[in-house]
Length: 199
Image (cartoon, rainbow, N blue to C red):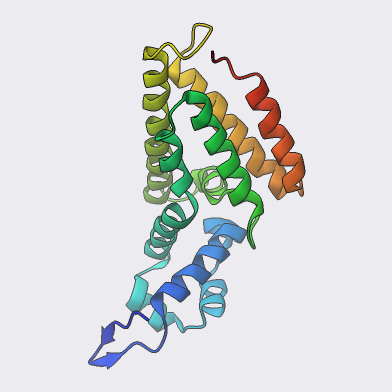
């Protein structure tokens, strides 16, 4: 249990558990839809404790996104290390199905945040967009490597291929939020891979 000192006294809650609870609230309600009362109720702490441990709501949201990326998006790093572009795509699509259907919250928090945060303060919007752009660039670079290795059977643009994969991942997230089952989303993944333009 992580204990941080406040005025010489140990904090009486586990900050990791509290952050995990906050992540679920943001995932379910989005940044703007989440109130401080929602957060303190879910985290089991008071507002002064929230401010002392995490700063304000914006800082808490950033820390929740950090936790989400570490716990839920590790498959992106695994994907770009895959031996072929098709294996990259397969790992990304299967990972997105797992995240979108595998827990208490449906859909991808990254997709939810990138859509919902376009109307909030610029600092939050810019942070969310920068995270998305960083992940996208990893995939673009990996697709370019595959193009350079002549993996594709047709002329292929790395950015366009990445946008195609991301569109599929976002579609999986949206359909999961709308109630699509894991089996249905696996069919989407299988159909996409059947048409993959590789040797």
